[in-house]
Length: 101
Image (tube, rainbow, N blue to C red; front, side):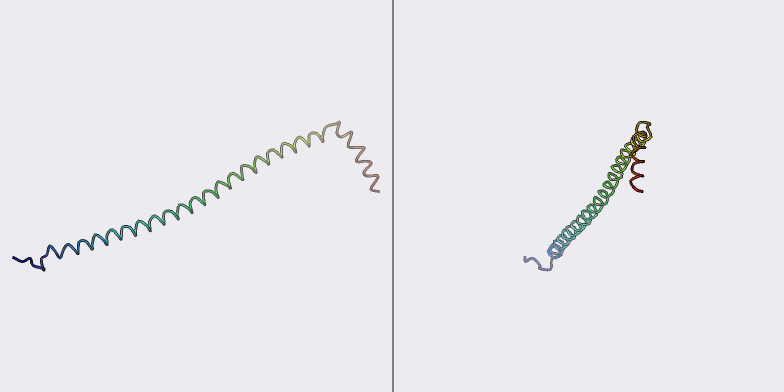
């Protein structure tokens, strides 16, 4: 007996293989697009975080420098107010004023 070419089992096989091929191809396309979107998003997030961290570090260093300079200014002002320094400065200031006139 001959096999009939119009056998439903044989018609289903190419259709099923096409469906599986299309499904795998669609899955790979979605996987590639999703991975690309994820990587681009992560790059942007990392760039933003680095900017924030650098801003924080800069602010901390600025505050450290400001505290250091303020303490130095405080020491200099205390030295300028001391009686020994004032006795030394008065003759210098007086001679400077005489030279101007």
